[in-house]
Amino acid sequence: MRIRRCAALWLEPRELASFQLDDLLAGGAGVVSRLCWFAHAPHLPEAVEVDAAHVPLLGALSPVDWAERNDLDARFDEAAVDSLLAAGLLLAEDTDATQTDMRFREQGWFSAAAMTHMACRWEAVDGPATMAEQELDSNEGLLRQHGAPPASGGVQGNADAEIGLPRIAHDAFDRLLDARATCRNFDVGAVLPLATFSRLMARVFGARGIGRPAPGFKVFKRTSPSGGALHPSECFLIVQRVEGLAPGLYRYRIDGHALEPRVPAVIPPQPGDLGTLPLGDQPARAWTVEELRAFARIAVAGQDFFADAPVLCILAPRFQRNFWKYRNHAKAYRVCVLDVGHLSQTLQLCATRAGLGPFVTGAINEVDLERAFGMTAFAQSPLVVCGFGKRAATLVESEFDPNRRVWPR
Ligand SMILES: Cc1cc2nc3c(=O)[nH]c(=O)nc-3n(C[C@H](O)[C@H](O)[C@H](O)COP(=O)(O)O)c2cc1C
Image (cartoon, rainbow, N blue to C red; front, side, top):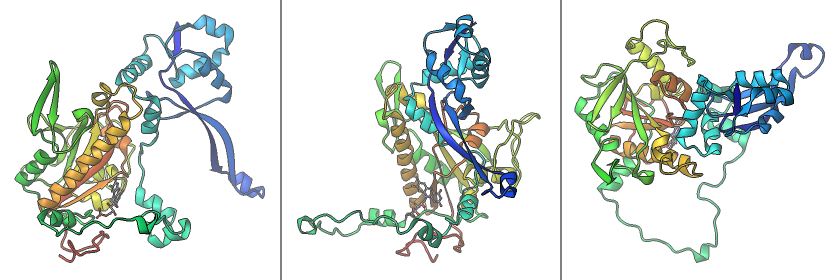
């Protein structure tokens, strides 16, 4: 058997603290910490703990050249080799784990960016509950725990050297910009007209033109910019209330301006669930309205006010589309992140123009979304969820509208 190390690997020394009743009863603080090593290898779904004694073995093996198992056993503890093979950090030739590692290599990730991407994903997180537990769910709590924030306008330089700019009268476009406010109060009784939905999809995610820079190289023009004009980001949808569309999961098809229905393979979530949806053992079926709403809540990490939107857009780059050009490039992942920010802002403005409330959130359960939509995290993964819909008549959750452009309604 021939063995090598996985393509990308970063080791993190971590201190883990846990509550120990024994320690408390013995007069201690009840919190015991231990030092350990975690291996971040982005072809694996999450970081894995490794035995400190096995760390040198990881450093001794090439990620490129194969070594004979017999030679390794002569140099290292056999059990250590077995344990790292089982963890997927060492790879034996012609195994499924090696296939996954090969697929990771093909993507063209800059390895530090791959670690960051994989490590920042959430599963089954309830954002508002976590903030409440930490007493960070109010401005008073924030100020109490963190003190005053850094100055909003940045540090004042030499005021005498400043050049005042002329104030230009506002026009209709300013009025549109000023009317944008993150919506946290959706009208859960309102159904979005199909024409409104379709126009928004076309304006934000649709192809406005096609370029063919070289044979076999096709690029779409969108209303937002994209690094290398590559537009790696796709829009996956949780459609809850759009006229004429069955509530469900969809993928927007840029070529053809169409929706591809997606039947999730995971078991349907129930109200109150917060993620970690296992794969279903029954044949996959479309979800009920209640199950879909429960899934929308999981998607936005427990932020019910966003889960009420009739349409949630999950923006997920196919990384290899960008990394094809910017291969193993230190800036490429950042460009993908910026790309989805541009798409989101276009969505915010187009939705406002349509008289709707928009939102965007980075507090999302990526792992649960990947599982439901059948994505492999290192190949395609959600970076933000945004959405839109009709605003409710009354304000329950706070919105930032200091100039009263939106409220009272
Ligand atoms: C990348 C990004 C992530 C955000 N994530 C959240 C979020 O998780 N929850 C939330 O309520 N608002 C979120 N927001 C909205 C901001 O809170 C909002 O933009 C801010 O309060 C200013 O209000 P405005 O958008 O109405 O101007 C996010 C905004 C951005 C740009």
